[in-house]
Image (cartoon, rainbow, N blue to C red; front, side, top):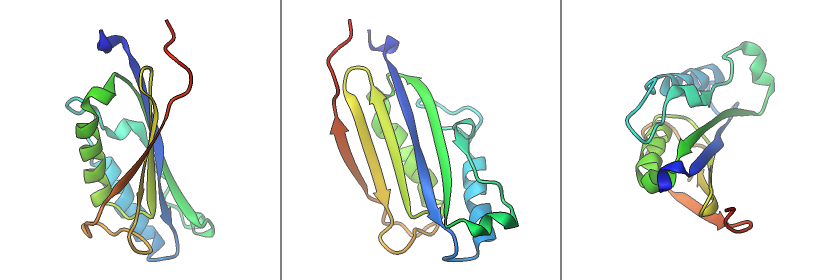
Length: 143
């Protein structure tokens, strides 16, 4: 039964600093990730799976803010469209330049989903989110 199949989801959201008020961008992004629920209806997309950069003046020396995330699921690929919709809702409320999600499945291999802003960055509420998917399959079934 597919409920025993483990799926791993991980990736990052990147935002370039210096394009706008860095502190405000970081606050908006942290607020968006912080507004996610502790636990969500299946499939889970919750704040505990995300790590946000510390909002600190010393971070302004870096060129890219990287917000990473990851979780283990039971066969999330069967609910993948719903998971992607929730992730895109999150992206819609954030500043970002690109986002990458890796989905590793036991039966279907690895899928990589990539979002890139249409301009120099995506601003909250600006719309225009589109995704590109690449699939790779390494090895066969492990019985």
